[in-house]
Structures are given as structure tokens and as C-alpha cells.
Image (tube, rainbow, N blue to C red; front, top):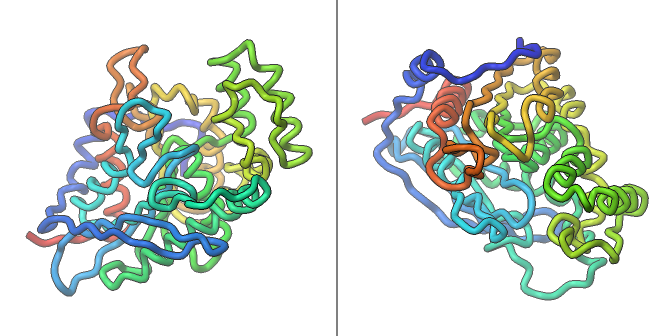
Length: 341
């Protein structure tokens, strides 16, 4: 059980978990997929399979990307460099004997819309429930493949993707995956997080942000007269999505689930700031009658990369070693991954 105290990676933690992560598949096989999402959408994804043997099945994990136009690899055109967070996580899992399915969210990358629908149509297409259902569809696609054990799966969501993973786990009921990994995921409602992000980065626009968010909560629509700086934060078509996302309480919903859960967070995260932004999730794990662990890794960013100093946003570079070791070790232990030379 976990209370308000959390784990911080140190030499002892790394040594203890490294022993669980020493799995050596014969290589990795990558498959490009297209599968049905919610409401008739077609989603594009990548299935990464460890080559263990011709007859041995492996555990599997669905990777859910964070907010905005973030693709299956964890890259966002608003970030001027490659992040590759989800791609690196998939490769780390594959080398630990665990398959993964990562996919472009609806409207992004290979899952893009090619026509120009009206704002009304986009409101429905990009509704919160559509994204939650897409997580379920991705899990169904994962277990459809014969190489994957259908009883040994997990969801891993990064940032906003963690909120979608919690919601999907709750919605799936008995069909839910066995485990849940929340990476850089807020424990408070998204509206509170956005308000404080804007107060830190654009304090002169805080009053405008409050007015826009109030309108979204009441009407489910984004006011057309917002400042240009908010166009990527509050897109015109995202009113219905944001209305539901602002109302979603990740900690309260997690409390209603009973699957094992791992929280991974960077101590240098400046978007979802520890400990306050994640404390509700930590408290919830302490109250649930289910296994739960927390790792807050020092000098690690929101994108789970090492930072060199206060001015480094932590976009580039490999997955932080402390994060990789804890993640693979926890999932290997939970899902029973095995491999042979």
C-alpha cells in the first residue's frame, strides 16, 4: 500500500529492479496496422513484437499518447525536435519481452481526416468518449493477434493519455487489462492543470483563460474571440472534448478501479508539477485494495527524459534509465514476461 510518501530512484532502486529487466528476445518485429476506432474512424498504429519463439505468446501493452497533435511515437509538431517517447517505451518493452501497440490518435498522422468536416461534425468526431472508446478498440486490436496473451495486458498512458487510460479501464469492466501505467499523468482535473500552466507561462492572459474555460464548462463550445495564443490550447472544434475533460476527475475514477497500477513521474516536470499535481493519485493508490507503486525520478522531465539543468525542457535524448528500469521491471513481474536466447 502507498500513502503520501513516494519512491525516488536511487542506486538501490536501480540495482534491485535491473535484475527483473534482463530479458533478451531474438529481435523485434514491427507491423503497421489499421483498425476500426470509435464511430467509424480508422486508426493507424504500430505493433511491436519481441521474437521469443514460434509458439510462445507474450504479454502486451497499449500505449496512449498525450494531448494535442501527438502521434504514435510521441512526437508533436508544436515541439521543434523529435521526442520519440512512445517509440522508445515500445522498444524498451520489446527488449524486455513485452509486445506493444501504439497508435495515432484520431485526426493525427496516419489516422488523419482527409475531408474538411464542419465544426459541428468535428465536435462529435473529437468528443472525449470517442478517444476513450479508441483506447478500448486499440486494446481489442492488441489481443486479436495470436502472439499476444489476452490475459496479460496493460494500458500505458502519457500525460492526458493517462486520463484516457483510466477512463477506458473503468469503462471496460471485466474486459479491462490486467495492469495500468500512468506516466506524467495529472491527479487533478484537467481544468485546474491548464489554469495553472497558463498562470505560469502566460500570466497576463489568465483572466481570458478563466473566461474561456467557464464558457466551455457551461456550453461545451470554445468562444470565438479568444486570444491567438490560445488557439492550440482551446481549438475551436474541441469544446465538447474539453467540457468532458474538465469534468473528469482522474483520482476519483482511479479509486473505482481494482487493477495494479504504476505511477511514473519526473521530478523536473514543469507541466504536471510534483508533488501537488499528482498527490491525489498517490493518495488514491494508498486507499485502494489493489497493488500500486510510485516512482518520481529526479532530474527527469514531463517527457521522461533526463534534464541537464533548469533551462532544459527535457524533450531530447533516450528514456531516462530510472524510468526504463522501473517500467520494464514492474511490467515483467506483473505480466509474467519470459524470453529465451
